[in-house]
Amino acid sequence: MPGILAVFDLDDAPHYSSFCRWENEYRMRELRRLLRTSAEQAGWSGEAAIDASGFQRDQTSYHYRDRANYSFQSMKTTILIDVNSLAIKDVHFTTQKAWDGHIGMQVFRRNAEDLRVLSADANYSWSDLREECRSNSTRPLIKHREQTPLQKAHNARMNEDYNQRWMSETGFSQLKEDDGEKLRSRSWHGQFRELTRKCIVHNLTQAAS
Image (cartoon, rainbow, N blue to C red; front, top):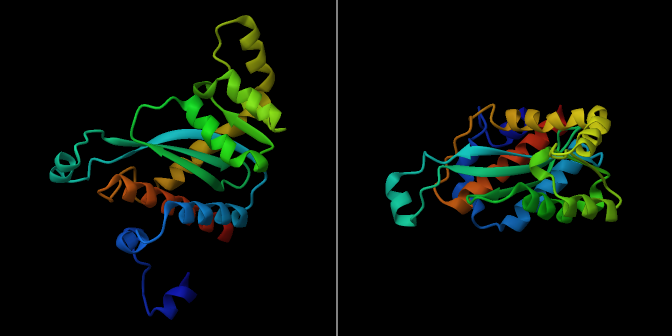
């Protein structure tokens, strides 16, 4: 945004990691609020998809890893993304082995009032999640694990509407476009904030385009 750069007499925008120390003064709750606001600006239709991908943490120094006593190499990131505008309204992070169904339930409950359709692949196939969606007047387009002919028939019926779920992969592709999958923050809470900032910038870019 040239107008903003001119105010600060800058030729190029500083990298988002430059704000790591400054942003620690703000709670994650505030960043999530800003994320939701930026999603509304980008355009939120209520037809959303949920999906997960990994961001690599191996740039963290070996000294810090030993001191913090962790060895996991990736940050599992789950996004709730509008299939029409590609606006990201919510994000979930974990460094542990968590089942997608439980993560999906948590993300849905935080955003139930703003969802008309929820699309997800078979990793989120859980009857409790589908019932939770229906009880909140949200249509669940969640693929079944094809173990019976009835489940195959359910999947065949939703195929036409389900195709838009792949927009979530487009969203992840855009998040990783500039800096790839690697995270620069060394602490896990810094990495949560770094990825949330990425999503906010993504939304503002979608709103401006």
